[in-house]
Amino acid sequence: MLHPEIATIVDAVRSSPSPVITYDNVLERRGAYHDLASHLWPSPTEVAEVRECLIPTPDGSVAARLFVPEVDDGRATLVYFHGGGFVMGDLDTHEALCRRLADDTKSRLLSVAYRLAPENPFPCGVNDAIAAVRYVAAHRNEFGNPSSSLVVIGDSAGATMAAVAVNETRHLDLPIAAQVLIYPTVGPELMTPSAHEYGDGFLLDLEEMRHEYEMYLGDWLDHTDPRVSLLLHDDLTGLPPTIVVVAQCDPLRDEGVAYAGLLEHFGNQVELLEAEGMIHGFLRLGGLIPDAVAILDDLADHLDHFLRAVS
Image (cartoon, rainbow, N blue to C red; front, side, top):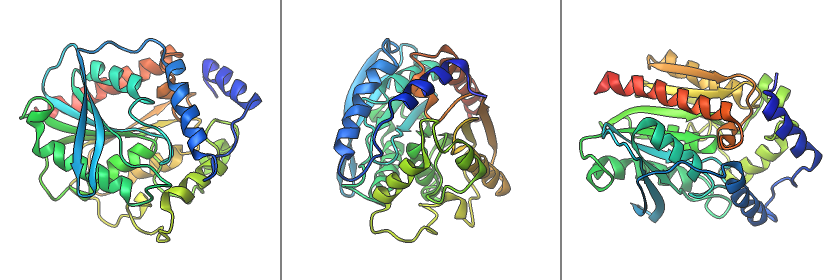
């Protein structure tokens, strides 16, 4: 059952739906997605410092933004990858969420603007994510405490970036204390029961997601590549403790649950958190819905327990 405040927002969007994203309107949709951000969280959390950064990659560099909370306990640096269906989103669209998460965790948070499709299709984005995690691990002194642990976090498409970056670097002995995957998308097939139950009219529609994956994958036809379809990994041993957050009324709920189960199957520590009555992307609504902020605060508490275990 939808949370009452979420239901009000869903009804409003259903009455005036956006056009399905395509190659022709992707720039327009990006602009609208960007403009909406300030209305979703009109009074963002104060932080001590915001710093613009560039992260070098094998293909050049990507922009990043460091958020330093008022209270920084120095235990961890969070590396964050934003959502937006692989084709939308930037450092601004998720700034309010990143500010609150930095404040909640008392940790510096680096938000990374990986390259977007369709201009930069797969594997450009995941390559940027891998490079960013490796760079921050090797240059922690540039972002805070040089002995801090890393926490790799992503939401939606950004959770794919986070998961792939952690999976692809797990043999490098990086100081990654945990990963947090928030309502992740783990492949283009979209055939789970939750996808069909909530895939129309709950703000994240199956038709939209299929167009996004089409633009994201471009000419890449191998959907069995585990960087594309995370559930097809045949070995996920040796990963850091993981928190997976799913929303009850999200078409991606079941695949997030399945990925959490796969991680457990390979012997990893996993905590699965389900947000009752919430939809995909609900954390970006924190400025409008107090219960969404409460769930974010609870996530920070769970992450704190993980960090205490390794500190």
